[in-house]
Length: 128
Image (cartoon, rainbow, N blue to C red; front, top):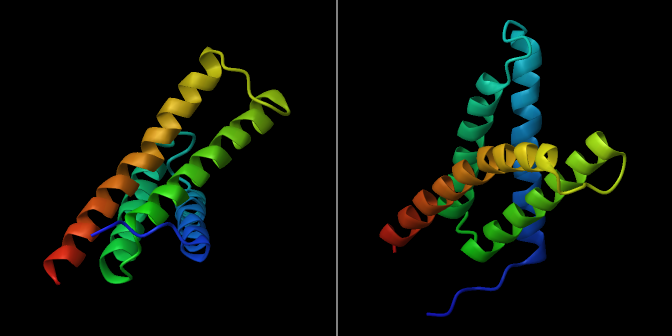
């Protein structure tokens, strides 16, 4: 069985889910207010939301893995652009500051997404 190619609509919906998870985690952080500048609880909430969203898209909606991976790549490109915009006012420089922010942020986004995607695709395979 050949893997399905990514579909643009599915990639955009999955990318919107990633963005919505980040915004919802930030909203929870602002509403709780007691976490202060510690972003670890926000990262944990975002990780849970990302894993749940990827599990839903891969398991129940049966999105192809290629579409979910393409959405993850798009999210990582947006992360690079955001780091460049806020830290350097344009294009990022590949220095220690960029690497420290990118690696930590990419792990917070990618690991839960990949875990949820793998669990969801395993669920959809078991239902066939």
